[in-house]
Amino acid sequence: MSTANLTRAETAIRANAVRVHAYRVELDLRDAPDPATAGFATTATIEFTSTHGETWLDFLGASVESVTVNGVPVAVAYDGARIALTGLAEDNVVTVAATGEYSRSGEGLHRFVDPADGQTYLYTQYEPADARRVFACFEQPDLKAPFTFDVSAPDGWQVVSNQAVAHRNAVAGGQRVVFAPTPPMSTYITAVVAGPCHRVESSWSRDDLTVDLGVLCRASLAQYLDADAIVEITKQGLDFFAEHFGYPYPWGKYDQVFVPEYNLGAMENPGCVTFTEAYVFRGAATAAQYQGRANTILHEMAHMWFGDLVTMKWWDDLWLKESFADYMGALASVEATEFTDAWVAFANRRKAWAYLQDQLPTTHPVVADIVDLEAAKLNFDGITYAKGASVLKQLVAYVGRDAFFEGARRYFRVHAFGNTTLDDLLTELSATSGRDLSSWARAWLQTAGVSTLTLEPAGRDGHEIVQTSARPHRLAVGQYDFDESGNLVRRNRIEVDLEQRRTRVDLVDAPLTLLNDDDLTYAKVRLDTRSLTTVEDSLDRITDPLARGLVWSALWNATRDAELLAARYVTMAQRFAPAESNLALLGAVQANVAAAIEHYLPAAARPGYRHAWLDSAWA
Image (cartoon, rainbow, N blue to C red):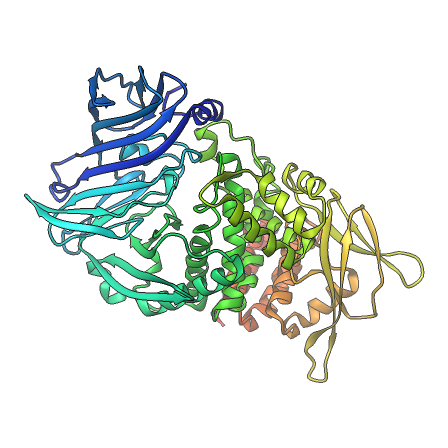
């Protein structure tokens, strides 16, 4: 195995032996605009204690020029990924001078030359373990420390990092920018962005706290940056999380930088969040696109607490931080911004992704066994993000919203600037809810696959909810009837706990009964015969977009599972898609119809349905 592939076992041993007290990272980026320059000078000074006489630092770069241990130069022992340290004392100061390499892959320090004006831009991206491409470090999330970044860059450039600038002065060939020390944090969420960026500033205040806000992009996109809208979402999100998390924003300032050639949607670097510049809309954009951007902004903001303030010990719990942020992005959108139907997109985009991934041979439990970094890189998928967030939404319903947020507040207070595992969160939630979550966690997090819920008659005037792959659910059942205007509106709603394969429920007579109303749990839902008939005649009469989205989802899942004829699904889409006002739903239906025609219909029937669907789309 390459020494670049760190294992959980060996990093656990290192974490038991090492305590890191401080980093000082010096980067010289003054030659970055010169395309002939492939690398940059990087010097890391690390203060740490060690109970062993030897350990190693991680670094992936062009070369290591020198290593100094406690003021004494030592022979460089570098294998291309690890720098061996020997002869350590209990208290140590190690300085590593090296040469890093500019990246074109979005890993480490990415360099981009703007074709519009020839300007050069740099930004870092580290998750899960690419800080070592920029400076020598202990590359694992559970060895937190304060960082001081000292960056030399060309004149006229904006230089941004996790903290505010402490001082700036002129140096030969450019400027030197030194940032204030960070609170203790993991290596993978440190950040540096540099270039002639366009910047818009604002601020947010609550109680005795004022946070400076910045929104940045490359200069050639300045005319397209709708910074006011981004700042508005940012302030709404900070208000929401300050109120619900009960812990002051911990990172001093809050910059959001839209960067080119990004290989992710965004990254939660505290105080210096980076986003793909695809979110800087250069033409007309749909409401769904603005909603998606708001959701991402709020997702990354939630990480300032869950993921950054409190960080997982190892990548086994990657799913937890991403699921928490995914859930909070949607919740904050609904409750704090104009995008009050964000749960509709969540149900029909994120959850649809999860349902698909969870029925493939490649599925895996939400809690995966991440033995090394290579496994961690493979775990950024629909199970980690979308199923995890769906399961977390079910957990909120299962323990109760008040208990969930009180548990989260206790979790932040107890573990601030530390590292945790899933058990630490479940301990707090069990204490606030009074529910033992160990069996819940086993059923939801350590098994793969998705349950299917159906409604069946049970005796005279009775019904049972039947589930495959029985799991504990807290869900709602909604019953819809026609009002005086002919619209289908909810007349009855009950909440029920499912534990066994069959659970009896008392229902009223209604044309449409919707299991998992409000989308509280993670399960495929089947429509009973009467409800399917109602939907086939009147799907467009369901006024609530989330209920309508759940019906669309139920129809598609039944089609994928060959329980609803593909032709029947396409016919319903032809009839009701033209009236669908929610763009997230409409986009999903359009994609599903295309898949149904090309994959599920007999080959001989496809040309006719293609033409019919094209006519519907054109109309």
